[in-house]
Length: 63
Length: 166
Length: 366
Image 1 (cartoon, rainbow over the protein chains, first blue to last red):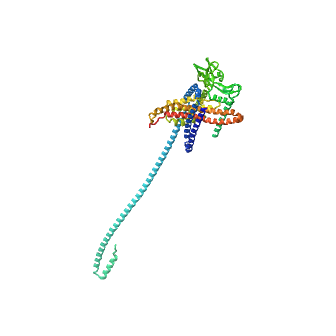
Image 2: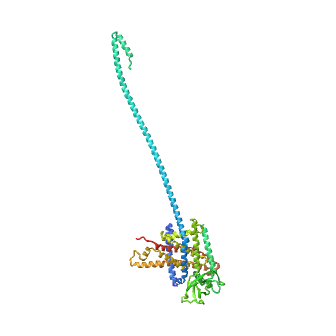
Image 3: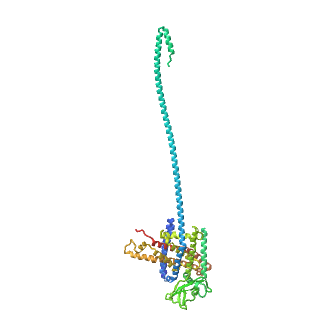
């Protein structure tokens, strides 16, 4: 039960983070469409790092 | 975490390590090395070709500008030569004109001088002739006076008629 | 051309989804109940999915729920238990009987092999974990078969590409598809992250890992039922390779900056050194392995759950409604999984090259 709540919290946090990354990346692309490729790559990397964090927490929490 | 540790199979880990290692070595030998080498070669080839084309274009441009330069030089040279020739011609004409002028002037001056001296000589000659004539006439007149007055006059008249100023 | 490609892609996905749904609907696996009914309760479906996510010692394409017959083929079991023991997994009869090899008895329990007595008794502790001895299991399991298949595909495809270069500088046929991928890994992943001077040394590893993960992920989407990159042991191994590579290739500057960070008060330096070391030795490989494992596991779980909607929602929506719903949803998710299959391979390679780049970088002294 508690670890399900923890998982929910992790998902909320991760969701907020991913939303921020995605939103800012979109803004950046809209502002500078010619840099879209670079922004996308950076966005994916940061997203992956965040994802790793969230998954790590999920797995540690599911113990 | 417990679940994961329980799921972790050391045997599978070992097999994966072996397979991955062998795969990396095999792929390096048979695929990645030749592929990357050929890609590099190809890219180097393309770069070389591009460079060569660039160089050829530059050379062509140099050649063209050289040609233009030479052409321009030739044209200016020709222009210069024409100009020089024209100047030479003009100066020759001018010189000739001036010389001719001077010669003519000289001739005129000489002629005038000659005329003047001839005139002088003629006048002197005339003077001497007139003096001779006068003396002659006077002699004849003096000789005839002895006969008559009329004769004398007649004589003078005829004498004068004979005399020309030349 | 683009439209054609799209149609092709969609039809491939449709085919995959359809066939995996059929395989799922038909296959009871090891978890069909003894009365011979096909699985239809939530618990059975959960157990089935869990069973799929685990490695298995045989290849089952289809199980007839009525008669309990499995269609597929057994795989060799290789055990190290005070000596090498080899036998075919058919001896287990899908976990129903005890296998005997050189006087030792083994039993398959939830995909793991335990040493038991002749009756196959398994003792449990208070958490319901078996306490029997687990011999070292080097079997050619389903995942190992998948890895070998992926490796074989890679060797075939890329050695064809390599041979193609001997005939001319432009590859033909399928190699034309592979070449841009190799160039992509080189120019978009390795070069910008590791640096122009040093990337060459790591290309073999990065390319192999990229294509291995990608092909393994894609194999997981076929109805063959592989789950290679969803095995924690596999991702641990991949991450460990990356870690070993960047730790052994670390430049002097890297170690200097990690262990004795310049420009920071001396008291803080040991603390920073510990943080950095833990980061490089534990956290970075851990996040690498967990990301891949969790993404693929979650992907398989979601796809299978959506396919299972066909069964669980049958009462609520009727046979046609539930089938249609599960088809549409699993089609959609399978499309996303196709993207994830590439994305995870990309991210793993990208982060690996990023870490390698951090390690080999030579800083300008400021």
